[in-house]
Image (cartoon, rainbow over all chains, first blue to last red):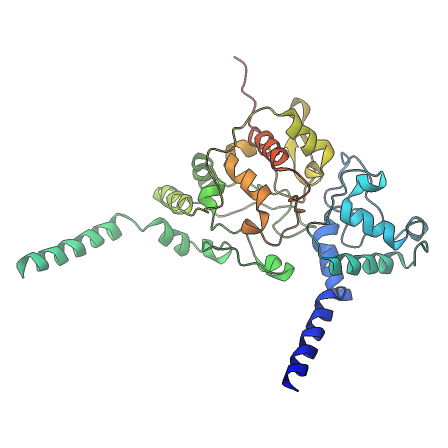
Length: 121
Length: 223
């Protein structure tokens, strides 16, 4: 009985660890890492975007543009950076920084910002 | 018995003299309230984004491995903003106004901070020099310049504003710390806005970047 409870507790813990970040956690992650270039509200207007910035960071509130991308596209660019999708190296590869749950949470947060579901892959 | 009393008296006089001559750097650091924004005991404490955001200023527990003594001493006497934006803030431009130290406090606190070191920084690894490969990575291959200012062509300040400025970083930073930070970022800053490049850049590439950044120095004026 005791052993079963321990196994159940471990499974619950494992599912927690694998779970995507909650909406508020995802927003915190977005504001900490992504907002540097994409802005706190995701309009592509973070403090790094001066007139000399070589590219225009994606405006996540633009549903038209965001609907051209699948969730897998978003995951690729977050994990492997701009050059992985023929975009600017100014978009860093975050794959060694963020957990899988944080990346999944971020994708959901981006879909909240664009209020769009994205291209279905 | 007498020698023991003499020793105790002597020791008391010595401590007394030290107190009269001035407090130690660590005492000045605390008395001036520096510890309210900067922690000085390692290892790194931050585990979550909330931990990092709760800090009012950068951690200094490895200051002696990170900074160059001459720069630190001059900065404590006349602090100028290093970060274009306020610490942990993406919307407020750094207003400056870091408290200044004066007189003997400058040397005392410099000595204290330079004594705070990390074993993770191995000395003699990085020699600052012109480095086209490092430049290529810094400006083109990786997004370093997206967040860090540097002196571009003809000394024009280029680069982003969310990270600390690297203009004249070769005067401020210990070249070996730059490499150690790239190679083992979590030792120094477990939670930070900068991406982790371990596994993305080779050790050789990190060395090239460290050499390149360590060579950011003011241009010598021609006579």
